[in-house]
Image (cartoon, rainbow, N blue to C red; front, side, top):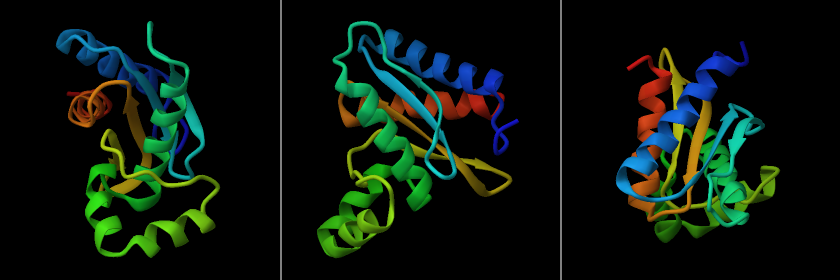
Length: 138
């Protein structure tokens, strides 16, 4: 078990995100990271550009670091752009405000992040939510 997410559950979460993408007719890449932003699983979906896996990873790590959905950070960046910039200087990656990254919680604590990239931010978020449902056993 890695920070509350084992490989079996991580794989099921990624599969759920990819199934969501297929159902809505898009191609995506998916990343699941631990609370420190390190990879647990990264899958580049069939037919996706190579860079989508890296974007998914960045979304997942940002959601874990900020403990909130990445789309919510857009408003923060608009109001206080220095916060995102300063955080980026402290983290080992540059945070993103692109939608599609969600924190993974266990008993209220953030234990990781899921990121999806390749479609619209709304579709990416929908597929990330499907992954969270799979992680929670739903």
